[in-house]
Image (cartoon, rainbow, N blue to C red; front, side, top):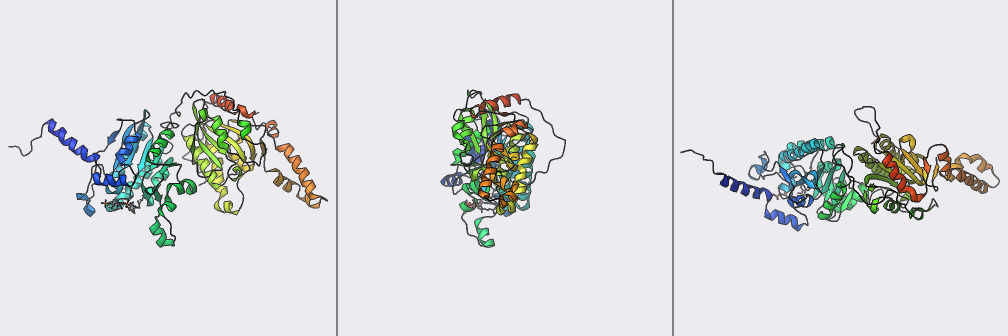
Length: 523
Ligand code: HXC
């Protein structure tokens, strides 16, 4: 009699179903309930919400750890704490992985890392975005240096994929130590608000022991802190469902890879639509602040604008919209915050956004109203020279269509940093309210006429007179337009129309760069 007789197919299928049931339970019912108790969804529930119904396909379903140390040989789980695969989101192919906190705290060991890497390899080959849903205790302690090696492999894939396919992370749990760096290497980080979600390099306990600073988990690494102070987080989600909704909305503006155009949508908003409210939104008095987002909402199709980094460095506004159905990336100074001056954070924010758009064939629109870079020791000591240079680098490097509209002030280095002709802007327009000069009137006059003002009988009178002369010359767009620096001075209401027509003309733009390994952007 044979020692082993292969069972019939119906029995094999029955066994498979039992095993699959086990796979789907992850760390078990009790742990899933515990996860729910914290207000969190399980990894499978998250993937179900993310993908179009019934479209998800799993890879390496049964893979599990090879480690045996610390009882892992008796405590192994199919899937190894991460679910990876592909499916459809709004009909488009997307890869995703979701860490399963119910299995060994979602910790990352060798096999767990391999699954993420495999998903990335396939995604890069077929040119599809990757969404990572992170919920993990970090490197799996039992697997020692193999876990760290695993992280290295994931980081490497993040970098290999950068600029090839869009990468989005949903921060749906804790992330501590080096585990924070995969999310940081992706293009966009969406973080959920609440006590169960936090990320930091060093947690509150070690912070207290090492430097004596007492801080809560949320104050150190909650969603609000990272969205307002560190700039690590691009979007704050109110809850898990909101995070999924933001992900889908973001994807709707992005091509699947760097060889594709971003998705066109017939929005029904006429390209030539006059922006009647433009004039009243932007005060001609250049010191009066206003919120540039009001203008953006009126320019883009159907007022739909997805703002990136909404709560960080608000003196510059960046985000995605459509004009005549085509996706654009908008970079705009916002005088409602610090008068629209550019500081270190604003420069970092803008430069990163510009480079993303350029990598993924998204045309760039600049709306300019800035008095310059922020002065003072704080900014100089922190390196505004180094950081400010990033905008110059990013706009110069970008080969996508670039259209600039100067709506009000455009001074000094910041004028250049917002994209001008010599930096490679394809079209530059100005409103009649534009002021374009090396520096603001009073500063300029005090430098040009220092001696005359000092020796004048009435210095105040002379100062006023010289300021008036300077303003007459430069506090308008015509001096620059006469020199050929502006393509046209336009009525505010025509802003959308000129952008739409410019984009249409630039649709087949080709611009090449010298071959090189990579540039050296000032970091
Ligand atoms: C192995 C881990 C684990 C880890 C959690 N678990 N983190 N197992 N390796 N890193 C397990 C726990 O033992 C527990 O198992 C289960 O996951 C749930 O964990 P709890 O502690 O009960 O959950 P909670 O109270 O919600 O706390 C979550 C946590 C905590 C804050 C994340 O687990 C924690 O501090 N973990 C360690 C974090 C850490 O130091 N990670 C290494 C970071 S350094 P049972 O069986 O009881 O359910 C790092 C380096 C990366 O990641 C380097 C890249 C270069």
